[in-house]
Length: 310
Image (cartoon, rainbow, N blue to C red; front, side, top):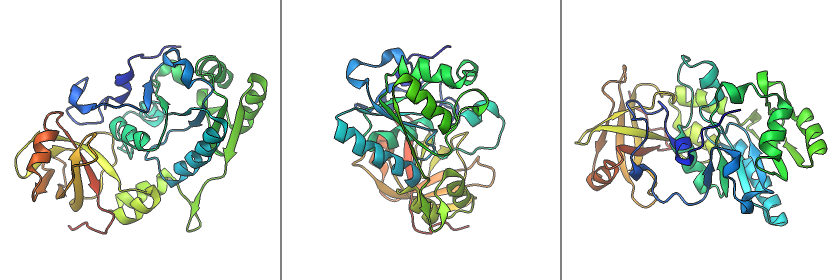
């Protein structure tokens, strides 16, 4: 089994930001702190072993994922254990269908931003490649969860699948937990208005341009890392390659530099029909654009009000 063992590589857009270089400038990674990002089990420090770990793709980290997080946080506090999450890059769907239409709610950078504010001590973000995909379920459990990360408990939803050809389910995971000495907590999906809160329905809302409905299920404003191509006013931007794109039109957004939670300013995001004339129209955000230009990226948070106009 092979891993790519550079921590910060797990945060690379890897094609998710149109026109991005192989490695983003250092300014895109300001004092990351917690969570620690691991791309290989051997990188884990002794103080992070024995963790309670969430397993899943966590695209968007919506309220259903937060339901798992709340349970795991309570267990971690009660048992005095570190809290971790596993989320591979690229998304498995990207690996198996690289030419599929964009579907992601997050790129690696925005996913990390969400993990960072969620209280995780570490995130295990292995490269999802052919070697990783072909592990059988027991090999994954033994090599990664037990011998590699030393987990004490894993927390999943009931529909979690793992291993080659998605052959492992939560029943098998419980059996392997008993054999290898860790606990499995399997939670029911969160339901909102009689529907399961999941990434699929959030994608439907975004495809319809309904940011209020999408934000309600996410539990926070949907946000996208945009590449600045021309730092003037309006600011010309490029949409992330693998991230789901809303319908053409104008959207109210709040913009801020990547990693900066203090600066923010309202703006209007114009999405063109063909994607080649996307732009941000600013009112008073020149300093933010100046700061964001260091990394070439800016974070746009879609306002949860129904703000789209055609």
